[in-house]
Length: 282
Image (cartoon, rainbow, N blue to C red):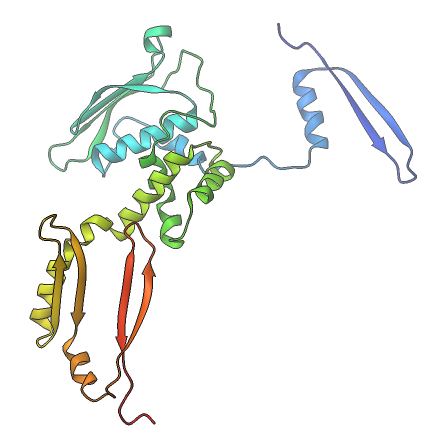
């Protein structure tokens, strides 16, 4: 049953404390909206996710990043437009998606994208942008809000502020994007963003062997030692002394100072640095 008329009561207060009521009766829906706008001074907030609705536009649209970029844009497009979809084909060379209500309500929305052999770019080959299911309503929760999507969204934030916490990201997603995301998804997204910017911590230990070879090759006279557990093949400690430092210590007083700081990343540890005092420094 539709709304035929709306009765709006506006109470006006004068400077002397008296008030009077202004009754507007039999106001149509459009007139009622215009009336409320005159008394509502706040501006409509534009979410940071608003451009996501323009992520997919036409047949022939190109995605330089291939299948991964297309999937990311498609998920953001579905979140902003307020519908869900399922993959019919989800491969590295072609992706086909349809509305999740196709079988239940016969929705006609569908998209097909495939790679071009010449450059491996993804191009939209067919696109039916018609939702006949009537379920395209944006909500704050969507199953397509994955850790990968959140990671790509907040990567610049994590780059500018490396100490960004998951709770900070949850607030940004809520206020800026209008999305409610669980702590687990956000935590994993922050870890992926850090790994994409600074590299994987577990893989960085393997680079110590390359670093040792580079030091010995380009800085002759240096000393490098990597200690690891012979049974488990796990890293234990790493020591390096550059040739210039070794030469400089020979001219210092026979006192060696060690300064220590704790490593607070995923793999805990201590970082030791040796210092000394010049021999002619009284």
